[in-house]
Length: 124
View 1: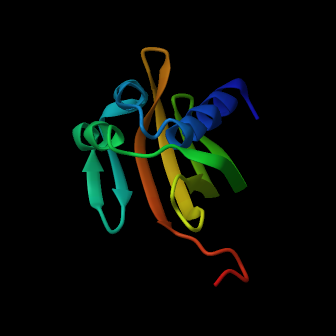
View 2: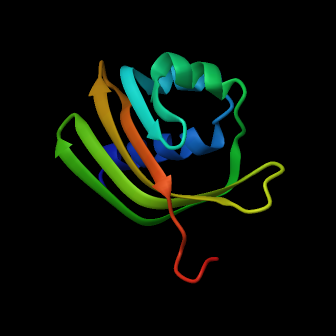
């Protein structure tokens, strides 16, 4: 992977591990950024920042089947199966994730992320 790809993957991982940090969300999400996470629906940046204050960070985060694509020099897409544990949850969260990052003023920011349920083969 390139330096930019490594930086974007690291930033993506922080969305999992720093999911309860509004300051992180404010800085790392593009101003017009949006998340599509059912059943919550469309979540724009102001909502995401506010929700992160009540959120939970994930531990034991694993990215499986990671694909990184540089779409343009200032746009990178990630697709992967993600898994992480949240405090108090019986089972780890597992999702199929697609995230798109843009580079603005020399910084990578999350512009779009889409999450859907994922059940690894054999999971009940």
